[in-house]
Amino acid sequence: MSPSEAFNEGAAFARLAVEVQKAEELYRQLHAEPRVSGDEGDTLATLMNELPDAFRKETLTGNIGIVRLGAPGVSVAIRAEMDALPVVERTGLPWAANIGAMHACGHDVHMAAFVAVARTLALTVPLPVPLVGILQPREEVGESGAHDVVRSGVLTAQRVGAVIGAHLQPALDSSAYSCTPGPVNASADEFELVLTGRPAHGAYPHHAADALLAASAFVVSCQQIVSRNVDPTMSAVLTVGTIHAGGSPNAIPEKATVTGTIRTMSEPQRQMVHTRLRQVATGVATAHDCTGRLEILKGEPILENDAELAVEIVRHLNAQGHEVREFRSYGSDDFAFYASAARAVMIFTGMPAASGNLHASTFAPDAQAVGRAATAMLTGYLAAARVLKRGRA
Image (cartoon, rainbow, N blue to C red; front, side):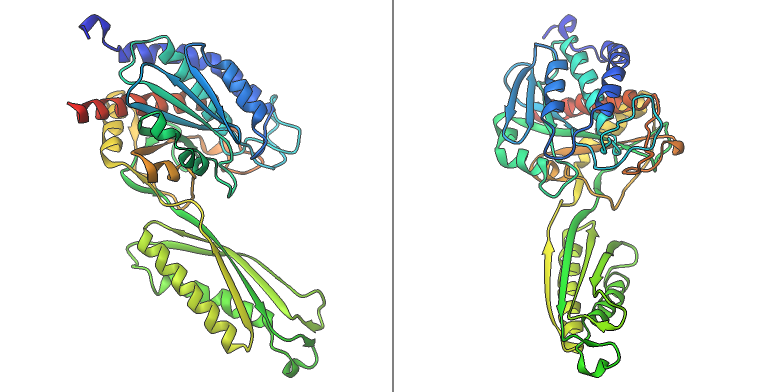
């Protein structure tokens, strides 16, 4: 390739600014027309129509969209998740949704940002490497869309050498980005313990094997699993979210059900917490003359940013004059399935505190959110292209 044919990064970012302005109207449209997990067909059709004809477009089972720009060869993929949450919106925005669902996690911003990046790259060929867009359903539920994408074999078929994700993050200042090497999001597992004892009248507790008392002891004992088993310089989270038992104030119930979540940043920690949880469940049930059935449902794995990609992205962001901070969260994201299958990086983009918290009914990204997410995606793509080409040198 001659110097005159080389990809011009400066021109790409200048073009991106123009495309972001156009994509902001798409963001408002997507926000006003949310589709919850499993019902993203309309959203996928909208995105496919918004992408330039230069993209090769394919729809897989389950509302998965795969688009590609560029010649055959090793590619860089960008993920844009499409689903909304079953949350009644209370933002007061002119383009607020009114169908009992809303984009309370920024996926509308991510989609609009990807379209801006896609249009930019379609106008600034030749590309350093081909671009693959993963238009992903079901990020917000256990039936993970990312898991389905990985299982489909499309990463191999498209010769994806790296996957880039970007996500709004209110915990970061609006001017900041984060692309920290190593684990940045926790694994997310759920558990359910069903304790069964003997019911009795509340006046005659000696006739009972009290499942509710056993459940209470289990909840208290769970709090020691992290505090007395995890290195205090590290961390993990074990949260009990529900207890269901009984129906009368003067009756001891036969059954109690406890559910919760387990979050860890390393696989050995994850396995240790699972083991200790089973031991506590068994011990508490035995001590209270009950039987216990514990089920642990493994969810998203730990999201680990590829170190070489992360360092290159931070270098690019710094060169553009952006503020970059370290950030890790015990939240989870099914983007972790990509990181388990290929080199991958999640870039977090800051937001003003007034935007609200993720998943809140008042979550309202500011006017610059699409631009920041698009900058993260384009920077990630260019940095990953540089790393992949360096690896082939």
